[in-house]
Image 1: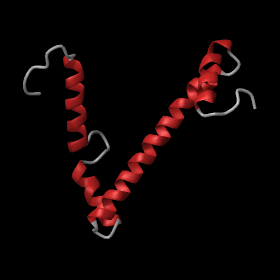
Image 2 (image 1 turned 180 degrees about the vertical axis):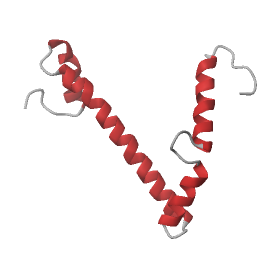
Image 3 (image 1 turned 90 degrees about the horizontal axis):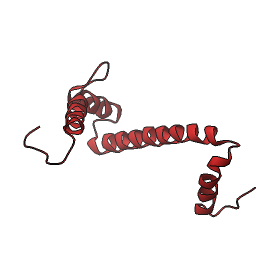
Image 4 (image 1 turned 120 degrees about the vertical axis):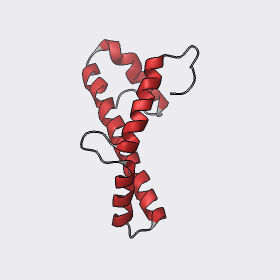
Length: 101
């Protein structure tokens, strides 16, 4: 990366650079960004607006699914433990639900 990053962890910026390169050029079995664009365009009648909306919708779906699944682990670990009662109470108060069903 160009320039110095004062007070920043250089390994973080190396990771960002790697992630950028991987997203543009592909890594492993994943294709390049251009391959993905061509695929979405072909699937959506070469309409760039429809293809972009479909890509964004699919990426949002994947992110939401990953977030939901990663949230299940702590919930299962907390079941029946007094240590997790505070987090449980906060979650229910935040959503306006009663503490106990």
